[in-house]
Amino acid sequence: METKADFKNIVLKNGLLLGGVGIAYQVLLYATGLLYSGSAGMSVLTTVISIAISVWFIAAAIQQYKNGNEGFLTVGEAIKVGAVVGLIAGVILAFYQVLYTTVIDPDYYQRTIDLVEQKMSAMGLSEEQLKTFTDEMAKHKPSLLKTFLSPLISGGIGGLVLGAIIGAVKKKTRPSL
Image (tube, rainbow, N blue to C red; front, side, top):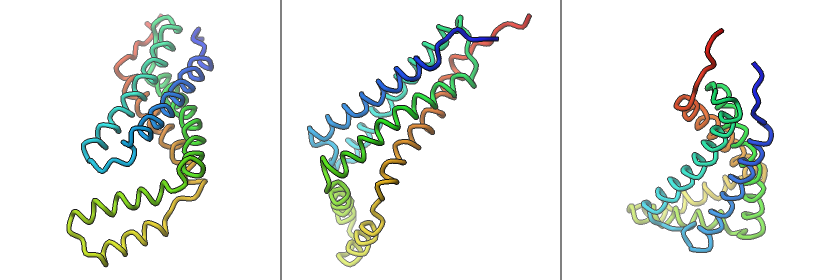
């Protein structure tokens, strides 16, 4: 059966909103100094908040799609909505990530290495082990392409997984005639 829900408008609106809120959240973390926090608890908290933001917008998109489809929804439709919303947000966040790591904070990767070095030093690694580790990290600095693709891929896969979970909860099939 044909659906009445406007798939394109729903996923575009929610994907753009998720990408915009994701950027605002990253800017907030940067402005408050939490982006480079050495606290494991703070790192877990910021990750949980980031996932909750994604769940909120993907669940909203799936509900809007379901409402526009006379209250019916299959898991496959939810997966499609979730994956596309995640991809759209991923594209926006990918451009931001490249801008951030090349213009706003070109020392981002070095700061990350320094943070890891501090954590490993606290674990009792020798100076030689730390030097070897940080040298290896520096050798594997991601290219601009990898920096761009990472949010794109994680957005698509994350949206797909969240779409499947939310779809399994919200599914409602049309009665057979």
